[in-house]
Length: 212
Image 1: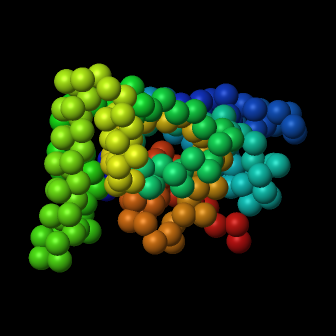
Image 2: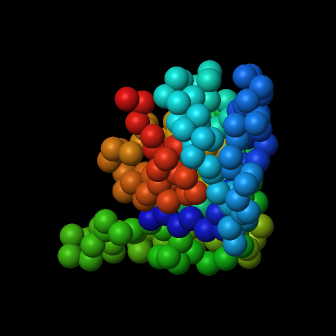
């Protein structure tokens, strides 16, 4: 399970101006002839789009403008997905809900965990429900006694299917790296995330552009 909300994309004008600095070709830029749409996204002109795609195909050293197109979003996903996302350290910023400080703040429910591949008839879903009952038992003991040994039991029994929310900042260059690394991954969450990338403004034309 993955939920992506509150997506914002910005930095288009600076990225396009900077893209044309090396050849002093600002007079050929045609994106600023069009007003932004209702979501504040700049319409990219055909001249600028052609140059963008040429620079992308030339490699990351030439397509530095992609790093200036920033994206922020809220993502709720299981810990097993975040573990893989955390390999992308450069060009990303994240503020997460804290499992260390707030893990006991509410009762655990089934909706707190990704469980779309667990079923009652093979006892996998009942097993998770049993674990949730155990987590709530230790949560109540910790609230009653403030004894940290119960908090440790929650932390060390917490399964990787637990869903955590983070607010993420990254850019189009990072998203391009993610897209081509993860689009065929076995996790459903990566397929869903790559679908979101495709739907970003000019996502198909820039981020998902094939090298050849």
